[in-house]
Image 1 (spheres, one colour):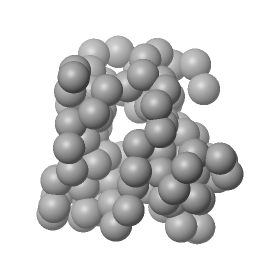
Image 2 (cartoon, helix red, strand yellow):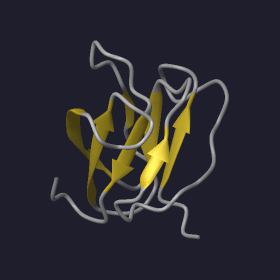
Image 3 (tube, one colour):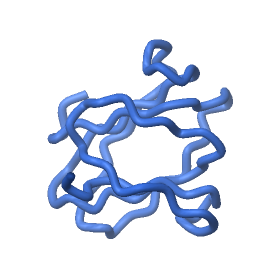
Length: 90
């Protein structure tokens, strides 16, 4: 699988590092994660979900790829899962 996005337990892409997963709109578990880094080049829309099955959307962000910007996830609600699109379309 292509390594497109990695989530972390810390707020600044530090702490426990999750698996490298693809930005292909699949549902990605986000338990005990607080930040992420998009590695794939180009802009990617990342959608945050309150539940673990990507059904209750609580926000989104277009994140630049290329491993240049760590994104802290602070939606004011729990975030149990995320999805990452292959482009900037949310």
